[in-house]
Length: 221
Image (cartoon, rainbow, N blue to C red; front, side, top):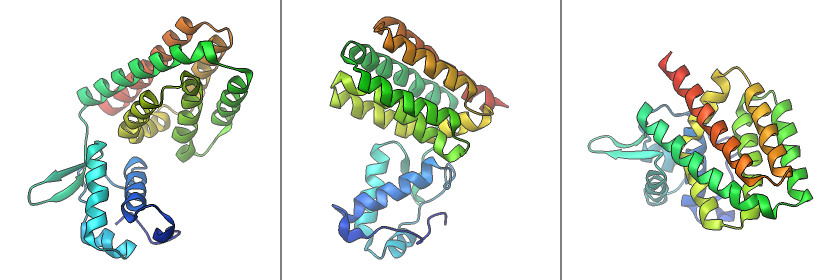
């Protein structure tokens, strides 16, 4: 089983046990520790966290709602898989949501926003740890949407990114590094500094579409 008891947090410090369990199973899925279609055995998880199966099932149902887990008859909970058309559709939705958020955000951006986004951009470009690329990529992108002040939209964007994070990690890894993404990040940030919302949104839409094309081309190989 890919989950280990090493460095597990205290459940007593969390709002609920199911919150912590969901967080760790989610990370195991998006990091690729769990393979697509692999069963997640509730008894093993309950034993690992020293809880009953009730919070484990609550956590798995939450992950089912996020599209990361599926329940199959006679198999129980398994890691959800996505077909290539489904991946393409999710990237399409991501492009639409994020370009809309950016267009709303650009007119309200401040120098503080540009500085923070620039720091994430530089950190992404310098990072050599593949496991950190997806996290820094999200930090850069999300920092550009915060000034839109649309929490519901941000939650939608976060949930879409969670759904495909393991594929984003694959795309960044198989594309051989962060070079193209870094160049496009800088172009998007430059358009934001120019306060050109339409240009920034168009560049972002193209950037996300490129990531999808890159991923699908590698999956085909």
